[in-house]
Image: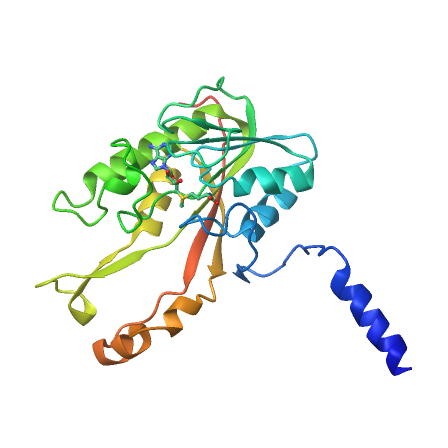
Length: 251
Ligand SMILES: C[S@@+](CC[C@H](N)C(=O)[O-])C[C@H]1O[C@@H](n2cnc3c(N)ncnc32)[C@H](O)[C@@H]1O
């Protein structure tokens, strides 16, 4: 009997993992495709959930900031046609391109996914056009960052077919800054809500999902102690904003 149970367990462990559609608006975000060593790679599970719900087999899916290619891997798994762009492409099938101008026809895409730089904390490349060089809490009040992101969002709206969807995965940011009035002597940058407000100018909101990162890094170093001493929360989640293009010809 025990041997039979062990054999069943071995078969279960060896079987390819079938991800399941999750029904909660607060979800864990663990699994990886793309390159797990690419700093800032998106958990593939997030993209898998979006594509499973908002696209069908054969649909054209675009990722304007495709990085290590996670979206392309998920598309391959789910039999969608994936097209990826990035200023710092990590694979030959990703086209080098500034996402503020996509080489795609208007209203030609079935779904668009975006995981942009969250301000300046990752140095993605030397390319001066990288939006990760623009500070969302800079002396300009983040104007240059949000202006650039609006150009990307507007471009996603242009290429998306009417009545189709996009997903944007992003987190807020916090950093220490001398003299800042915020908790713990720091500055909080509400990037998620700022980008949501920009997207609302173009798109109709569909949902906001909270993706819990279960970030092991928060357990290391001084983060937890600093949070207790400084009296602030550790932010261990990303937003996943889901938006729909609804062009009723009114504007
Ligand atoms: C958070 S990472 C994306 C990660 C990607 N989804 C993955 O799973 O690997 C953000 C990406 O935006 C790219 N990027 C920054 N500014 C860009 C721009 N103006 N046009 C295109 N890509 C840009 C960076 O090179 C970086 O790869």
